[in-house]
Amino acid sequence: MPSPSPKRPMAKVQRVALISRQVTERLGLAGAELLLSQASRMSEGQLLPDGHYFGSTMLTIDLEQLATAGLLSDTCDVSTALKVARLMAVSDALRERVRTVASQEAFRLAEQEIAPTAVEIRVRAEGTLVFIDIDLEGSATNGAIETVG
Image (cartoon, rainbow, N blue to C red):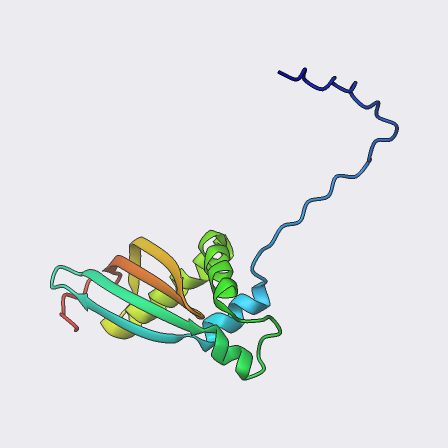
């Protein structure tokens, strides 16, 4: 059985870096606004007789179509869509903007202001499409009890 190779002594540090570098990626605000402004929307919701509202909105963003239209400088492939979905899911600013979109849709469907009590947001990618699903529960702010569908 051969003997293990001798261990080399630890290297002595000659120089130390003063600046530590870290690369982070985040969704740019201008890019996020562009994506949301170009998203197709599909919403459904109902205001119940007791004034409670339940609704959902799905935003669909076609990255490939936006790139083909010359609106994006990034390569918009499957990996980009996955990265965009991941970054959207953790962006507080984007989540707040998406809540606003869902509230606007609730207002449109209920034909009155809805005060959100619960909002759930899910972001996923399939191919070069990014989907944002928003479920919103709330109450009519003016106390109306008309059902709107």
